[in-house]
Image (cartoon, rainbow, N blue to C red; front, side, top):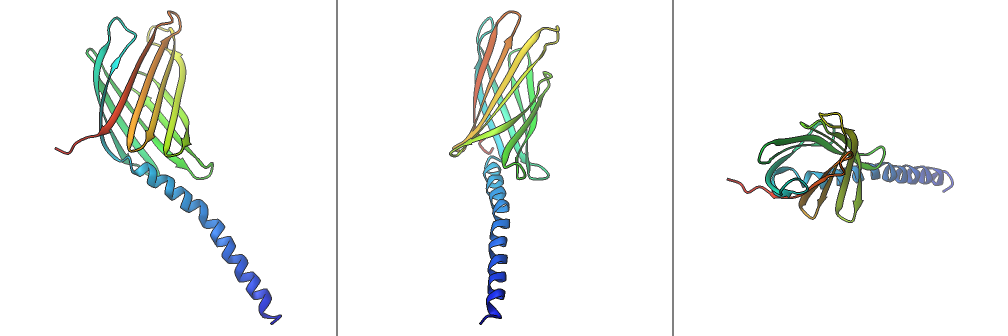
Length: 178
């Protein structure tokens, strides 16, 4: 019996190590499966408020599988006199145990955010201070919220010199197949 006991302890230790070593992979896979549930085409719309008059607009977004456990997204919103395009990535970083998102736009906004997970909702807050095309200070923010099978994007731009704030909320739903 004494010759088998060390063997049993060694096998048990290897089994426990294998279980613990496999846990992050399973966790990362579960997080990526959650992100993958948002793959596809999305439509939304809203109203930009804070300017001279409210401006309705429509948006579309595509979420596609990217490389290295990332989800790529690209979207476009059409307003009365301009188009806004955004693109970026969302990923679960297994080494840090957190969600991460990066975004850029044709308006010169770039941002990076760590996602906060609460229950089944993941929220990213992208905030940035920068200069507009006239050299004036502007605070730009975008909040992306994934949860309960929907996507919501909140935009806010504050012109620091005038104090003017423009906001829009865009709830997205899956695009109907046509």
